[in-house]
Image (tube, rainbow over all chains, first blue to last red; front, side, top):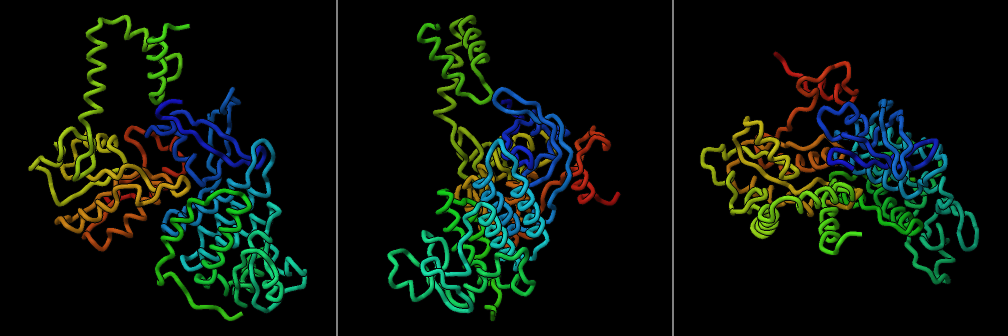
Length: 245
Length: 197
């Protein structure tokens, strides 16, 4: 690999994760340079190499310009991309994952700063869903009793909500959730979140921390980008009021 | 296949960036073909560079002296700081001979996906400089990549209140470039950064 080359990890619909070299992409005069940035959708043509493929043409189909205008948006987008990389595999189609990433990057690019935690958490939950490891949020993972409009506990190892009456007898680490947090978790299974719920950034940041631990537990990896997100939302100014569910 | 010292030389050369086994072999044979004194000079230069070069305690550029030559020059504009990611970016800007202010080398870019955060860079030191010195403008000369954007947005938040003017270098078409062959992202940036003539 030359000094001006870029080694890229690309998520494709057709072949899953592909690692490829973009020759001379770092040079100011490179025609390919601007097209192969992070979080840009391209129509790529690649040579099949012995070890690594080589990109020789790129046509930009879509970029998410709104992301770079704000640090918290950039943090959320990189967080989502990192989570997607945990799930993505090489050598097999990843259409659902690809479309999910695009949909949620679009939503992050258009979201206001207050809406970002909601948009991110929804994207993470949907990612867990297509991975087949989404937490159970409608019934108790111990007794299987439906949970609705009530406080409950959450077990990362147990895979979701645990009814309060089962919490005492279980030998697992549980986190107590109030009625609003349980309600918010149950909203995540829908294709989109109700508009009013987008503004509950304090509530969603709490859910994000819970889902982050859940995601890291299931994929056995750390989400590095989460540190930047924490930095962006540590100030109370980013927080909005607590909702009534 | 190679005699032991030659194999060792090839192995060591291969550790350098952009040097593969073939190039390492070519370089090793070239070194051995040249007069012994040249090889000794090369070895001495390597040892001296690693022993003597450190970072400037003011701007964090690579330098054998502290403060570095650039920080010691009294004819430079001390109220302007140009922030770059790496020492090689500083060299690129110096080559233009257009900039006469001071520098600050961050030592990298914030890359959350790789776990590189602000505390791993010389950002705290930049904030201290901007706070303690009479700085009128901070120029961010940082790559327009996602990591570059993240670093720029972070720096903007941190220093905006400390200095009257925070600017960023323009992005767009390279001199001698052709509009027809420019990519959409670069053209969009060029349009965004257009100026009145």
